[in-house]
Image (cartoon, rainbow, N blue to C red):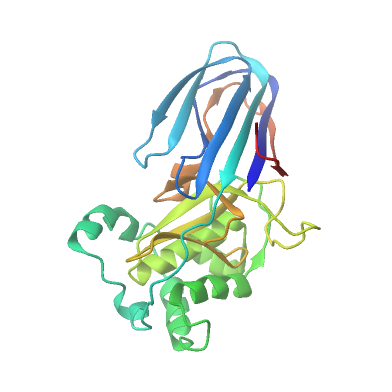
Length: 292
């Protein structure tokens, strides 16, 4: 499956502002399940780019600007080839909901940052949710993590949020609503509390249904989901927003321990009070024939 992805981000200001460095996480890494065929990145006003790998191994372009402007346009264009993802093969005993899975000493040394909790739970909302979830074990698909994703999918209402940041998982439970990044962050912190190494994934989602009505999350936006490391299977993708597991519709770009480390575009500007007018993001994904 070959796909062309166009991701356009525009910032608007009331008057010309000076831009600080911007970090762009828009280029996927090649892997056995996703191959980057072609890339193009255009920025206005003109920027000097420096490429690097961050601590997670993600490809990051650092853009530095000389001239002020009242708009900032960043357009990423990709052609990728998507293969099948790593599928679930290992059995996870129900007892893992209490004891966690068994990682080797070498695995645990690498995975520890993804096992450590990053969201406090002073009121015990996450722990209580897990108590109720554990009480239902055995009445679902038979796979603990698949059932965890489904429970979030079935128990929350999807809501597009254009403001920056990710809700605290406890707030998502209080509201029983959130965006894809809120669903993913809740899943990750619940999975970690059950002893699973989990990380945040940002990227895109491609709906293969003819009427583009098969997904909960909105078409035309970036998407977020979770990775869980399962012994024998490795990193497996779970999308609680759409109740998907290891699905080719998920188009991974970057991974991180916490959501703020996986922002597709981040940066700063210097300008007068009230300068910032708004942000627009548009993502278009279309299947194409094999490139020549």
